[in-house]
Image (cartoon, rainbow, N blue to C red):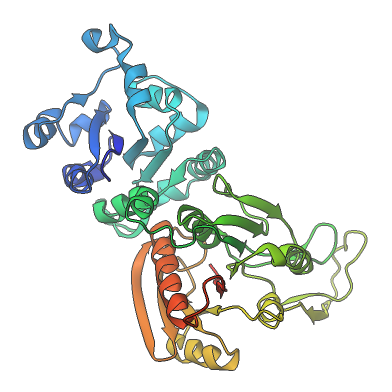
Amino acid sequence: MPGQKIILGITGGIAAYKTPELVRRLRDRGASVQVVLTRSAREFVTETTLQAVFGIPVRTNLWDKEAEAAMGHIELARWADLVLIAPATAEIMSRLASGAAPDLLSTLCLATEAPVIVAPAMNHVMWANPAVQENRQKLEQRGVRILGPAVGDQACGETGPGRMLEPDDIVTAALAPVAMATAGEAVLEGSTVMITAGPTREAIDPVRYISNRSSGKMGYALAAAARDAGAGVILVSGPVSITAPQGVDLVEVESAKEMYAAVHEQIDAADIFIGAAAVADYHASDVKAVKMKRTSQAISLDLVSNPDILASVATLARRPFSIGFAAETHNLREYAIGKLGEKNLDMVIANLVGANRGFETDQNAVDVFWRGGEKSFPEIDKIALARQLIKLISARYREALPADTETELPVIAVRD
């Protein structure tokens, strides 16, 4: 967006060939771009190419005598509104996670106060390596945004999660907060939004529990999108391994009953309720006080239904505009439209779940249904998707409001 100053860090992955297009997309959106190449990145894209095509300076060396005579890396770190690393290799993620600064790019990341975003790109086996995932978690816990990777064919001929997101998706996700503010899209300005996110854990004994594969990423993305749209956000979260967006009020819970209680404790303060959590449907009727010992005999587990948080909110005296989510393995449209009528909802957001789909991924594709209409969103980064959903939800809600109503706001239920 106009005035946005971005350091684009390019590291040595094959996806570096896409970075000239990424620069073009950023500049098309009005951003000022300063490129920093690592040594290995220069094997894939040259400073000459970037300078010739875009007429922009390229920095490559922490030991540039001319630039560093005036402490150039500090000046550059202070200049930036955002540091975007794309592609981000396993090596640069390791350096950032450990706080190492052997080159210009990693030094800038330590010296800047600007947000840092990385778009990973690597072989799918590398991405799944526990060391890489540990570094990813460390970075997310420190507030670094991770965009992707996408799932698909890779340069090595294999298929899986590891592809860098496409330039359009990266730009949309990276610049969305600024875009919403500068385009006058603070559609939730002055409202308070409560969002539930992540799974719940239902204890069996002090060691074991029932849960599900929800990562919380969709709910946390919705929290960030609502915040960027001007709302105050209360995030009621089950156990996840990601960091809450800055500027939201985090309430951590574990079980469905705890989430129910936390929601109702603060629901009066909320103008909007977004139920993004994958709440366990059942809990054990008899939770053991000590660890159960393994035996050769079969055992049975009696389960009791958990409270329906969405239903309890939707039946309050102030009935909110209500949206549900249908996470299905098959018959997506049939089940989604059925839920729309059965639960008397205003909208249903539906997605397929399964291996590398929906849960535990950074991308999602959804179909949204309402009475008399529908809209499909192809697979995209959950951060970008959340912003599009917030815009659609706001538009549908405002259409449904009585002409003399200005303060009523929706209840939204979305699972990730």
